[in-house]
Length: 115
Length: 511
Image (cartoon, rainbow over all chains, first blue to last red; front, side, top):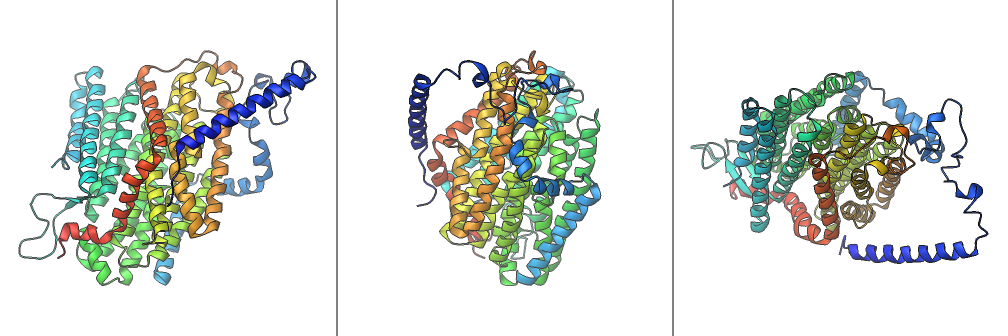
């Protein structure tokens, strides 16, 4: 009834997907004008950043995938949420204790009223 | 009966470690591995016995019967093991064995290792005690044994500020949470005059008082803290990354579950299930679960410290487990509730294996490169392919990618939450989207172009690789037979937990 799934179905789907990808890849290779073999087409696309562009003082990161390269779009998109979350993670012991007291008080209150 | 040996063996092993350590390093590590392997064997035998018979094992300390002489109620400490307790005992011993095996190489440059192995074995004793005890004060004692060992192990590497600060914060706040739990137990003892969980369940069912509800509130507050639920999770993000990686694997994989979610579920179902409104308790847990899911997984995305990312991910995964427990309580007695609870139990086991693997991978990276900063680890897959493969499997499993084990447990939770309240399922999916984003960051970093820092990296030794590969194998095998595991173990375990009457009858015999 609930929760039944067969791992093999996913293996079949993965295999078929791989086959389709290979066919599309071969078809694209045959019909392409060669831009993927030379020039900018050969560069790895890293979230819109040009891997050959040298940023002053960040020369040592040139061409590497670093933590800051990935998911920056998501992070920028919902930045306000992250700022709000970060603001609460102060690292102060007194804040940790306050949250514990408030949480316990809320639970005790809810149980007294509705428990 | 093998049950007492589950405590006796690691306890003896812990206190014998300093003496064995006098014989030198070659005796100490094999001793710790031998003790954890033996405990794993006992736990496996115990699990098989309970699973095969379907019975609840009861063991009384110091007498044949828990009942007092001349009185009709239990007065002695009892250990009461059902399928859920036996399953979690097996999980604890397996991860502890793997972590100790890994430590034999990972910790070889550290000093004071006789203290380290003693504390690891004491930590294991505490967790096993919580899984098997049927006495509330005995539960508290084991909880403190586990917690104090954890505080010390977080601050084990005291040559940097990170471990010491995290250890002190963890100790202060953890002690406060423990005092809430103790206060809850004291209130229950004052009200009902007993500490035996099964008998207490009967008393609460007959007369659920105001004091019992306050006690449950204090217990739930303290145990949510120990699970790392939002908003009382902040200690976790400090403590788990600061500990040595083998300990992080045990903390994230086991401690927050046995001392947090398992204890909460056990008390909510087996002790308070027949006395208080399960719907209210369930919804309280669900609300905290939703916050935990979102905040934990979202905070993981913006971390550049790999171990801190994994720690926040643990917070997020605890959200799924709490969601399953919450729905199990709120939809108590229905198929949806049963499946949600089975999903929570399954995800607890799966997450223990996955997160242990990920922390062991992080440990291997730190051991070989001396950094856990994602900005410096580009292209590590070219130099450490086996470690990177282990990470790939662990990350895919934790995201819930089929056909690995994480998918099966998450599927049960999604399915039951969608049937219970579609809004909850949507929150769970958003949490998974954040979780995926967080792990893709690490994945891209690992498989990118090699940076100068990783050029000289090599794979760690066999003693570190083998434990990782054991966990990889466990993930793959569990992923291939999810329906068997679910139907034969997880659903029966959830039914055992739901059946509070059987828990009471096993001890009191219908008295």
